[in-house]
Length: 422
Length: 160
Ligand SMILES: Cc1cc2nc3c(=O)[nH]c(=O)nc-3n(C[C@H](O)[C@H](O)[C@H](O)COP(=O)(O)O)c2cc1C
Ligand code: SF4
Ligand code: FES
Image (cartoon, rainbow over all chains, first blue to last red):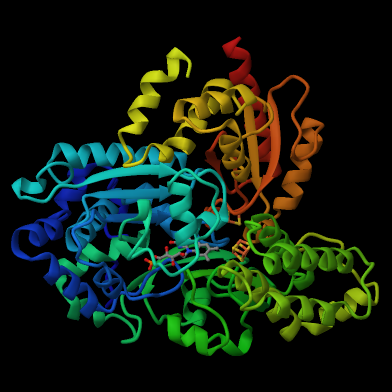
């Protein structure tokens, strides 16, 4: 039986430190700093095969192991930007389980030898930023953060840094630019952040949910964690389900839960009289999957094999009332507006894709438009400076592939001219 | 930097290894004080950090939460991204526009409300969603939105 890890006790007001401590909070940090060397913590997390929950799925322990041992200061940046449309899992963890995140941050910093961590939190989470500030103060007064944590030699400062409205700032190097007070344009790699990140120093960037997995790994061991779900991407996972299901919301389940179980069992299935049409399994940047894919296990490798992307684990469900062209247009506008403008294929391509979708939707489409959209997408795919370019064309291409008849209907003048869903 | 903001600004500097990191916090600081980031506010931040005003302006122009024009007392930011649109966000935006007599991006003549259409607010499980001065309101219906507008109007009246 799967027991929740990330949301355990979340109904007992875990923003109060005494409640968090009462359910065993901070025992992992205590164990780490008193009983384990930093190297042992890195090894444990590596063996757990925890993969990054921010979207790319990079193994966390390996990332930590990349930092050069050269005596320079190093930093941890916690990515709390949560900008990927459809994703609302970090929001829950920040607002309702802030000490779990702080404990994960403290353990990660101990492991990598960082004495200053930054939580880069999207500007819209003003309430979340205040909760984190208050939680940092509470943890500090009890000796879990600040100077000489738990009476040992390890010290850590945590700074909450608010973003100001930019999806691209969730990309790790754009995040660092933004943290340094600049526009959120991504950096050329190499050098990778592990070598030259924040302020030119070795830096680890990890997602909120990734860091929230760390305390349980230290407390219960790598083998326990690795035993949850598929061996290739194990662990508990918060699935954020939105769209046209009966019970949208966050569901903490083992990695590898199938789309079918998540949508039809946990999220209550579709609304009265509606039929399943498509699902974006990993946020708005993931290509849509259709009925034949419903038995796909939700983990990094299986979703990739099905032709999409596990991404942030944000599952957006579309039923038969949804107009795919209009949905593609709405998302295209998003990527056009959020393109940082640094490279031409993305900046110009997202503009033209949006313009073509708009005229299709308005009834002024041309015969060649579906092919033109494919061509434009082809000019973007793999040719952009950062992954936002590929993100911008995933849903579009899947809608052309699985629902060509909807594009044809728009060309015949049967435009829906409705909302995204009717 | 005006005297009233000086202590806070100095405190911000202590949180970072490099003073330039104070850029966004300081832009927020002047926005909180003035309601928006005015050219004077930009200059104030720039001179405090010892950079050219154009640097501060270039940074501010990148970020949508920094208001480059005066806004109303209540900034209503309606999410119209996919999960909210699936549940009627476009309707809701129209409804609000009609109620307020303005379109997205505009401010009511009495200076009370600014309406903006924004991207995913990471609260899609309770769509449709909007923020009022960054406070979340979720699971919205036209009726709930009407009640919200009334409550905000009342709050504003009581303050006069
Ligand atoms: C356009 C774009 C937006 C991103 N937004 C986020 C985000 O909001 N939160 C996040 O954790 N990762 C985001 N990422 C992924 C980060 O670049 C990075 O891979 C991640 O923070 C690493 O943490 P992890 O290894 O713990 O997943 C984004 C990537 C791109 C290309
Ligand atoms: S792909 Fe290019 S223009 Fe688009 S966000 Fe990345 S760097 Fe900016
Ligand atoms: S789509 Fe509206 S909050 Fe995410």
